[in-house]
Amino acid sequence: MDITLKDFLSILKKNSLFIIICTFAGLAAAFSIAKFAIRPTYVSTVKLYVYTKEASTRPSNDYDNLNNLNYAQKIVNTYIEMLRTNSFYKLVKDNSSLDYSIDELKDMIKFEVLNDTEVFQVSVSSHKPEDSKQIADSITSLAPKTINSIMESAKLKVVDSPSFSTEPSSPHVYLDAIVGLLIGLIISVIISLMREMLDIRIRDEEDIASHYNIPILGSIPAFETNSERRIVFQRKEDKK
Image (cartoon, rainbow, N blue to C red; front, side):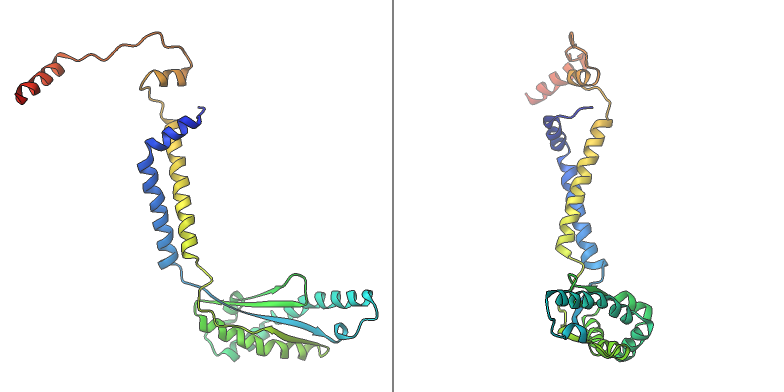
């Protein structure tokens, strides 16, 4: 069944009430879930710079400078793996004095290299902003000592200290509400189109022409039966 733009607009108009109800239902559902069902998450981040003696030596030319930069970039991933050990997570757990297990800390702490540089970022996510800040502070104090104890030639310098997050990073209540509205709108339009396409009932000449592609030679007009006339006549008498 081919649907023209005129048919599409006619279907939307015919099902306008259903579409409006579904659209606002999606908006209300998404807003309620994001506002009341999902616990907010707070993130505290710290940025650390990988400092090495090899990279700090004055390069004699551009080639040496590039080698030092590549060396520092490659070793960043090595240092991150050193901090992803159970022993480091245990140090963080003991230092922060918070009731989180090592496995929970692994899920809460995320390491990320920034744009192939010598700087990497540590993000701590939790449902309490003070917990995120406290764990991030522990990482800030423990990470440089841990790296230096393993490799004396390398050091970590704090580029950006962790801050206290006052606004949750997720959920995004209003954005989720808009997404719910759009989902409700799309689903209601699809259902309206499917109902129209699956409806094979013949109501008038246009339905016959569109379904069977045959010409209409004539039609029988609707006549009033005697009972209908009697009812109309009786109503007129009552009005008098």
